[in-house]
Amino acid sequence: MEFIEALIAWRKLRAGLTGNLKPQVAAKEIAQATLTTVTNQITQIIQASPLDLDDINDGTSYKRVAASELSAGIYKSAALTDEGIIEIATVDETNTGTDATRAVSPDGLAGSIFGEKLVYLKVIAEGTGLTVGDGKMYFAVPDSLNGMNLVDVDAAVYTVSSSGLPTVQIHNLTDVQDMLSTSITIDVSEFSSYTAATPPVINTTYDDVLTGERIRIDVDGAGTSTAGLDVILTFQLP
Image 1: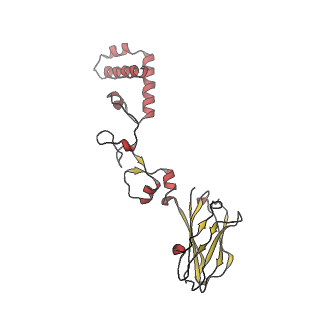
Image 2: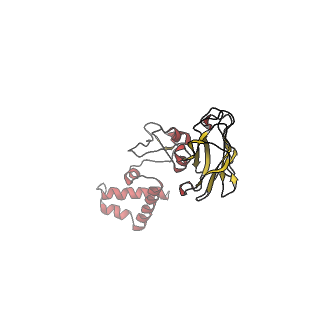
Image 3: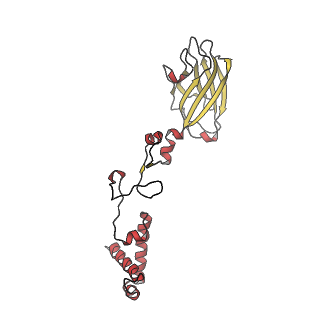
């Protein structure tokens, strides 16, 4: 009730200042203490909702609504150049990348394909035969990957194996832990692990990396007559 009375007083003051009431009458009705109360109430309204004083003065009522409650002619949807009510896109909607009416949150962006960071390693040159051994390549985690998790791994060769599976393990040398519970394998006569019968599995206990940690590429199986090796690592914030 105090708020309603204060709002009425404010409207009277505005009317008085615009000529609808005599200024001296408006000033007489509204003491300084009342004006202070009105100002405080209006400030609270403005802070709670992005409305200007004309919106408040015209007597319209406003409330917070869900996007599902929108109906034509009652609530206005936001557009590229217009303010309004907007829905936050899901990760799947962000991944699709075709929705022009929803907004993307920082968390949704980080969790989408647009939040992934890829590291492409040329471990063995194209014409060099693949052999078994640890430490075929090392790399230090840059600060741009700090705190991220390894979320996807693959490998590719330049000359396919005629028998036996080229097999690759990712090892965190700093933590002294293998990062894969199931290693990367490339099937016979295949150029990459994308089509592997047994896909690699990341050990989620050891998937995180920090700046400066050393990652090692190990070859646990070479196949037959295989040449070259690329390893593709994908990282993302948890």
